[in-house]
Amino acid sequence: MDKKALIAIVICGIIMILYYPFIQPLFYSKRDIQVQETKEEITSEKEADIKSETQPESTTTTQITRVQTDIPLKEVVIENELLKTVWTNEGAALQSIELKQFKDGERKKVLELLKNKDTKYRPLAIEGINQKTDFQKQHYNIVEQSSNKIVFATSLEDGVNIIKKIALSPGKYNINMEITLENTTDTELPLSYNIIASSMITHEGEVSADIASVMGLDVGNNKIKLIHTAPKELPSKNESVGIIWAGSTNKYFSTILKPASTDLVKLINTQAFDPQGNLINEKSELGDFMVTLETNKFSIPPHDTINHSYIYFTGPKKEEILGQYETMDALLSYGWLTSISKALLYFLNIVYKAVPNYGVSIIILTIIIKAMLFPLTRKSQMSMFRMQQLQPMISQLKEKYKHDKQRQGKEQVQLFKKYRVNPMSGCLPMLLQLPVFIALFRTLQLSFEMRQAPFTLWINDLSRPDTLLYLTFSIPFIGNALNILPLIMTGASFAQMKIMPKAPATDSQARTQQKMMSFMPFMFAFILYHMPSGLTIYWTTSTILSIIESILIRKSTKKIKF
View (cartoon, rainbow, N blue to C red):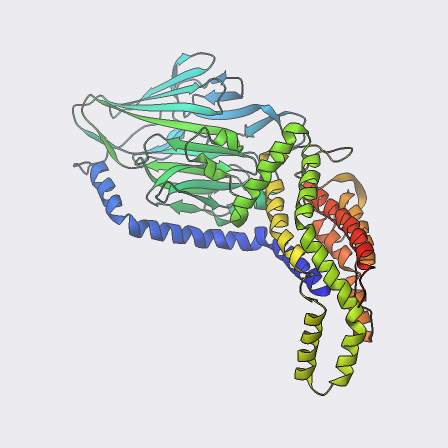
């Protein structure tokens, strides 16, 4: 492996490390602005039509004068095979939800996707109605309940009755919700309301890289644009035309509120919580936030009702599950290499069906990739071997034309052509492998299949580093976690360097370069030390296979004579 290839790998590795925490958020912000501006320009006429249809003739606003709190608080549990949900009649809200099929990050308890925290802002509560805030404190009557269904009802002083029906479908990761608003007066009533789409979703890892509010935006031609808003970008408000759903997501799970009508949503508002659970107009150190959906204005005729239906998805971001819900597969985003990531995941899943171990699947994937690249690798190393044999001739040219650099370069090119040597060929196999490496990194980091997927021995989660134990002291830039695979990879990298063909060190500069290159395995160990163990398995296996390739190629090059 020549110096240029190694430098290219190191630079790409550094970019990969810096991309997600520092560079990618900038792209998100720019992208969101561009999407919003473009959509507003293209659909300005559509927006005007929507407003004209939803604005009532009367400009008077119904004022909700009192929040009822004298009804005793009550909790109700409804569940199906996959979900256990706890509801409170304060706000007719979702207080807690457990996913029965999954364990928490420590693998000790059933995963509680929504934190059962003492907060007044709970999902699916109507937070405001006709600009009256704190409506989530309203106490509802429970008029019907069963094992998988509950109905809340309340009456307002202004002649509006609200009925909220909640139901769980068998074998589904969603809650069906229907809100019925009844006008009991003799006049037409204009209304709008805010409903809490998500709050207090459980963190799966570091907040800065794990949790975000999300919104699906219809950009036409059956394409859905996924827009993220990280906690550090809060508060955030989005009034784009074409919002079809909104909620929260962490690495592996999402809570998404999706109205049945695409014309219902006026805007999405996201605000952060402070440690005490109060809303603040700045970023939250804990990363907790609330996403609210505000409806367009609508009118209810006298003694009539209007119904709004919603689906509230609360489950894993698995392709076969998200595919059951229209447009929600947009949550499966792996960045600019999404197509490669999905292809890799598809292959890993196929192998997993035959050998139910994703670590083995990664090793098999690595073998196939190396086999596909072997012709290029062989050509590259043969060229490097010829370069090694040509060094005496190159040195003679440098001495002969030391005062004529242009002639020296021309003669050197002719020499390379004569002996079929390409100095840049050593970079090609590595450059072709680099997109796969980056795409696999995103696949292992974000694919639900890798969550808590064991390999063997101490490697029990391919989505995390393979920590064997924690030291009693901390190492600068490394921490106190002892990860074994990066150390194995470093040893393999040193062995690979020893057997790879390299140019003889004919001067002090060349010797200095070779000494610098000998430190590259340490650099790779540093880069990969905190990466998912699945990625380190890939790179370590690839390095070992490269050693075997070099041994085979070296044997064939011994027959070559100039």
